[in-house]
Length: 563
Image (cartoon, rainbow, N blue to C red; front, side):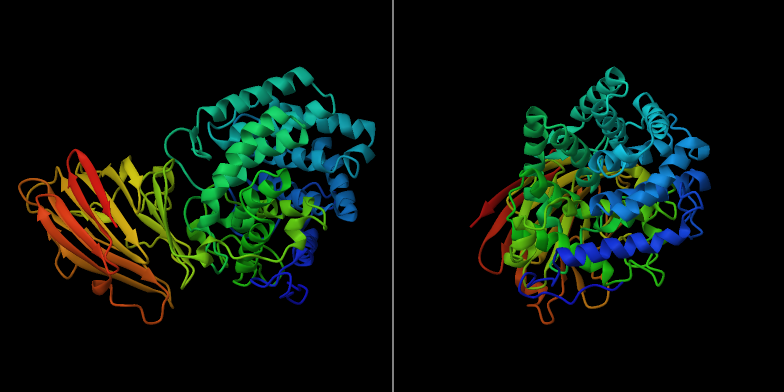
């Protein structure tokens, strides 16, 4: 992909400016054009990973998701081509929008694009095409959604149809219903679960916040914008901490092939004025993510986004992933809606949280502990509250980071016997430098886990109950890539092989862990010490003198921090 030369005055961290975003958008749009059908209604991108929805739906996905990119770019030439495809699509090419079907998802992207570019696309269509398009979209108002972020797709379609006066009552009903549904999943602090349970990941930003905030902003509904914008602003306080200094987003959750769609809430906060971040920090984080992926093979030799993370990678795909699925990365170009003279484009980049100082931040809603170090820019996420057994291992491991991916050998796990499962996660709280949870293995053992973090060092304690005496327990740590050091040392109840056995009653296992890219770090054993004070009680001391006294038993955990 050809981009302008780096601008180190405006972009001292990434070299990127608005011109780089525009060039990237133009290149992505140009690359998909050869794969449009003759009538431009479908985009059949190459690839052998057809989604479970089939080729026709995948072709619609290619149209809808790249149309969204053209809408953010406000490219009249490209929009003219998509207008041709719209006319053919609603003329009988596209599949109908039905209950829990993929076309419902793509209808939301089409409706949002039409709403954002109404004078450039919709208003220029023939009346007959507009009627057919409105009728096709209207099926989304009554189609049953999966009980998750899908509930917001009828909201997005309804917002557009209401604006153009098509089925206003049904549109209003769909909007109200979808917004009522997400209230059931708002857990406070700017965080939603993606449906029932405790599914916390990037869907918070690119779906749960995006659709209601954009709807409120486009509808000029001050009441809704105050509500949803306020939640977004609170979310961004935590969210900004999930990017490494190299621009990498946290490698956790599903649909990771959407890549720089992770920038959506950053841009959305700037667009609506509901953000705690400065303009320079917003652009630095967003541009860092775009550059991270473009520099690491996300786009192939044809200029197409691949199904994967850096390059092709089947490990991050789901059954619904088709050749065009990565183009939900188009959402990341939301910032192009901001005018060129907006401060987010004109202010010099400022360092993000991972670059400014070491930090250990507790996030209560998902029961996460986020640990970052400025010397190497790594961010680590200690997961003591998020799970979705349908998508293990991207939800159920004890820890994730911006430089690692879950391994097939069960990194960051407690393996009781031969059972590495972690289900029924029960959050036990987070605090100053710690997080804790309890989970049950498939074999019925209960594991109470606690992590304490300071700098790059970690203390991981696991109390195992309900396993037969003599059961082998194995503790694993980070699976590090080249250039990054992963360490795991036994502290209590473990051999040098990081294994131990359960006793007649609850058995405590403690390990020291570290993930670092520093070339010559202080030895881990000198960074932290752990001393047993009594049954289930430990004294932890960091090298600087601070520490904590902890108690772990079957009733839960107790942490007393010492300065």
